[in-house]
Image (cartoon, rainbow, N blue to C red; front, side):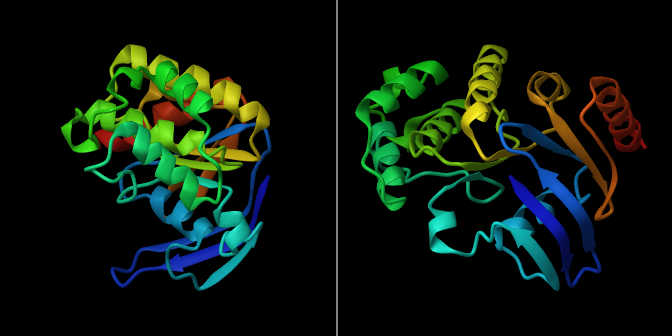
Length: 227
């Protein structure tokens, strides 16, 4: 579980994020909804300590080395691997960086699940956009992260691959401390969402764990983005 008692982030462009009393539950998938520029990425970066904060009261603290090694993160600017390495070697290096022994069997299972195993010896730079995304997800989950943050994980994926990712995340969430996802894919959100927070202009404007309210939040987003 992740508890954000308070978090405040300001940027030179006058954007200001200020949130309180957020809980990302264990064994649950929480989706952060919002239009572009609403503060989704700022929220995640603030929780992870990747951006300067004016105020931050978060448990656990991800600035500690032990907590960093339990993280699996895919956010804007970080969802890339070592482009000249193969899919397999990238996954191996990802695990080593987290002080873990690379598990060949686990790699095969996850890579096959995401449909990337046939490309295991292909360098990342030669893959399509969708396969690069699947290679990153394979590397990330091979390291068995307890806390997972995924920013638009289905970008570039075909419908079948999206369903595979959805099923995998639902199964994985049973053993995770928290999974936090941002996405604009409404069908994907409906498949994987247990709880949600709706953010607008740096503030939480709605939250719940009920499907009926999730549909209302998605409709709100659709209307706001259409303006």
